[in-house]
Amino acid sequence: MIRIRMTLMLLPVRLLTRKRTLPAYPVWNYLRELFDSTNLHAASEIRSNEVNSRHRVMIVDDSSAYRRVIRHCLERTSNIEVVAEAANGQLAMPLMREFAPGIVILDQEMPVMNGLETLKRIRDQYPHIGVIMFSSHTIEGAQVTLKALEMGALDFVAKPVGTDPVDYIRQQLVPLIQALQVSETTADLNVASVPARPDQAAIVGIGISTGGPVALRELLGNLPGDLTTPILIVQHMPPLFTRQLADTLSGICSLPVFEAQNGQAIGPGVYIAPGGRHMEVRGSERGVQIHIHDGDPELHCRPSVNILFRSLARVYGASAVGIIMTGMGEDGYAGIRELHRANARVYAQSPESCLIFGMPSRPVREGLVQGIGDIKRLATWVAGTGRRAVPKLENQKPCTL
Image (cartoon, rainbow, N blue to C red):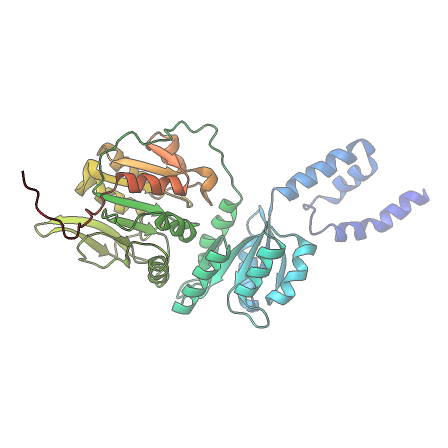
């Protein structure tokens, strides 16, 4: 009897101490589990599984208003739990060991220890923790964001400008957190590992999203400088960020990299769609040009991979190559269907090399791609199917018979 009284006295304490990890059980269910020893192990396992299936998130931002909005958005999602928050990196580091988050939402500009300094410490001490940067919508913010991605941040979300922050954060951040927890293997992918067609491509289109900046650094960095086949890229990014991305990539690869402009003639080099605007190709008497416009978003995406790929199928047909790479959602799928109908080649990034195997997943499973490979293999295929500049021979004398 004394033991039962002590247990009942301690019940509120147990419930409070377990608040961070236990789902909200009715008290009578908890009592039944507590006194039924046969159910004790099963109940513990159920609670453990429910907790493990939730995404543990930590928010690090010096703005209490932003922390409050982010927490509000995330905690309305059943499989996301905000386990801790801090106003700067110095306060955040000790909490990471205590609360063991799986993902950290990290602001760039903070006092005491800023976002890049905090990111470096996280990568050094807790490399298993994923970091999503919460980025300022400025040129400097774009520069810092790309630096953070180089240092190991998984992705970023730009801070809302001129829009409802609650809806914006819910639409941008929640799907990203959920997608980053999903992994996929190639065990059941029925797809060729080597392209079968040796003929040259007239143009290459690339669709990419989450994890793109890092993947593009590796892809473009492995392409030869004498490649003359134009490469057009749709990277899901807001304005300002694509200009910085083009500048960054131009400094590390052998090919010229541009943020595409409306009416630009297509020649050798890499063209990145400007953030927030669609890019497609159009043929005319003056040749093929890039067309930039502000059409409606497709699948909530602007720029849209679908719009680029459809235009490549329409203008270039079988001489086009489409590559679908890491990213969330299904942007690119409809465009790949058009490329497939035009007998163009389509390659996909492999699941194990993708940060998120979302955009390539459906085209691969439906057999719409001719090759699947990691980033280095994709670069090899592009170099192999692309056109190369004819080397100039100095002091070459005409041949006489």
